[in-house]
Length: 90
Image (cartoon, rainbow, N blue to C red; front, side, top):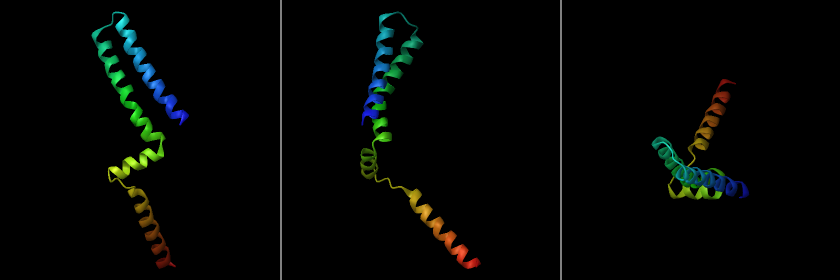
């Protein structure tokens, strides 16, 4: 929990500092646009950090979106096929 709080706070702080810093001085329009995009990304990155770090939230989001882990099913099928192959060759 501490790691995800630190990462989220750092992202928001960096985005805010960049945005405010460019408002205090004169900057090229490209830098202003880049800072606005960076600020928006830092604001939205908190949700991504939660999904990556917090397994409880990730499981609930996957359940709400009806996303299942198909990798396990494929692994079980591959294991069954491999065991059937080894039985038939011996």
